[in-house]
Structure formats: C-alpha cells, structure tokens
Length: 380
Image 1 (cartoon, rainbow, N blue to C red):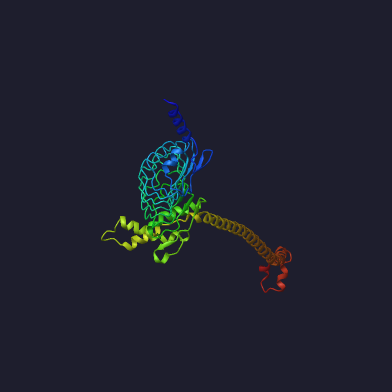
Image 2 (cartoon, rainbow, N blue to C red; image 1 turned 60 degrees about the vertical axis):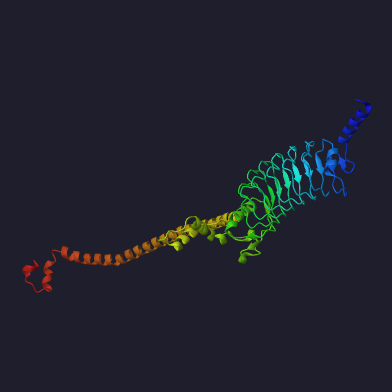
C-alpha cells in the first residue's frame, strides 16, 4: 500500500468522524435543519460521526430515505425528520436504531405506513406522526412498542381506528387523535394508563356507539387527567354539545337497543314490558360525580341520625314528664278520697257511740214505760 492510498483512507476516516459542513454539531448532537440547499440526505448521513445521539433533519424537502441510511448510528436516541416531503418509508429503514427513544416524522406526505416499520424500536418512548395524509393504520402498527408513552396521530385523514390498535401499549399516557375524521373511538379499551387525551376537531357522532368513549372520559377526569373539548356533530339535537358535559343518563335507552339487537323478542312476548324492565335495571353511573354523591349522602345520613337521636331524647323526656304528672294526679285523687271518708267515719262513730250506751244501760230499762206503750213485761 503506497502513501497516497494510506492518506486517502485516513482522510475518509477523518471525514466519517467529523461534523458535516452544512450542519451544526454540539457534542453528540447534530442539527442539519433548514439547510435551503440542494444537498442529498445520503451525503449528510455519510459524514455523521458514529457516536451521534441526536439528529435533526427537519425542513429540508427530503423526498426519500434509502434503506440502511441509519445503519451506522446505533447510538442514536433522537431523530427528527419533520417538515420534509417524505411519502413512504422502507419497512426496515429504522431496523438498526435499537436505542431510539424519540421519532418525529410529522408534516410530511405519508399516506400509509409499512406494518413492521416500528417493530424494532423497542425503546421508543415518543412517536409523532401528526399532519400527514394517513387514511388508516394497521391493527399491528404499534405492536411491540412496550415503552411508548406519547403518541401523536393528529391532523391526518383517519376516519376510524381499529379496536386493537393500542393493544400492548401499557405505558401510554399521552394520546392525540385530534383533527381527523373520527366519528367514534373503540381503541382505548386496553390503554388503561391514559392521562392526557386530545379529541378535538373530529365529527363525533354522539350516539350509542360513543358510550365506551364517554365512560373512558369520565374515568380519566376522575383520576385527575386532562381531556380537551369533544363537540358532537351528530345527532342534530346534540350538535355543538360537549360530550364531557352530557349526562350519561341521556344514553339510557342504548342498553335496551343493544339487548334487543342481540336478543330479539319472541313472537308472543311483550316488548314494551321487556324494555321497561331493562331500562329499570340499567343505571348508568357518572364517575366524575361519584365523590360528590358520597359526600352528599354522608351529610344527609348524618343529619338524619342527629334528628333521630334528638327525637329519641325528646321522647324519653316527654315520657318521664308524663309519668311524673300522672303519678302526682293519682296521689291527689287518693288524698281527696281519704279526706272524704273521714267525716263519714266520724259520723258513723258518733252514731255508734249513741247506740252503744242505750244498749248497755240495763238497770234503766224500766224507764221505757214512760214513752213506750208496751206492757211492762216487754220492757223487762
């Protein structure tokens, strides 16, 4: 190997570890945004240091990214490809970025995404797909992103989201689907950790199919989370109303419709009575008002208990006073009776005393001849 070849190799090695002239480098962070130059993405990536951890390539009008473009950036954890003209990605374009935690591909022209595009990004915590032209997302689009915490798919053309789209995203706490064409949403069933949900700017149809979303909104608000406005576009009588403020009881008839759809009445049954029965059994609960209900119930029960205690004490005092009064009246009657009997007893005693001497005076018996016209023998 001659000296010229050696110098060429050394120059290439030096180029691979230096900062591209059109970019700004600060340690392991490289900013190649707003270049306003006709420069290819490949030429920039070839000059990047291998230890680059943060790379910004936004607002450069890039149209394509070739497979393997990021293969030498195994330490990259922050990648920004926003505000370009990207319309598609190769399925394995991010396969080498095992350390990537943040990916922003917003404000491009993406119409659809390969199913396995993010399958190797096991550490990805934030994914920004907003302001593209996405019309649908595969049910397995985010499969394997177990560390994902923030997902932004707003400002697209999504008219529906698959029920299982968010399955497995146990750490997801922030989600934005605003500015799409969604009329209903059934994808939040397994996203139990959500605390921040953006739903504004969709033509929501506030019918029976929106009950699961209504319940999830109530749950997130009850747990102290944040929900932006959810204005109904349909039906007409609810147009412009915010779903957050619509009482759950308005959807009370939905349980009956769901029941009748799955269990149609027999020919000899009475649907009206069945409907009344189902309606009486269904009691929708507003989780947001549960705490207030408990407090009010506690206050009412406390007041009732206090009133019952006061009533019982008053009843006891009244009973004691009535018993005392009755006893006094009874004693007064006894005293009067005894006072009335004393003169009668004295009179009887006087009469008895008057009779007793006349009976006991034997020697004076002959005197009766003076006033009685009986023979002397009788007097004796």
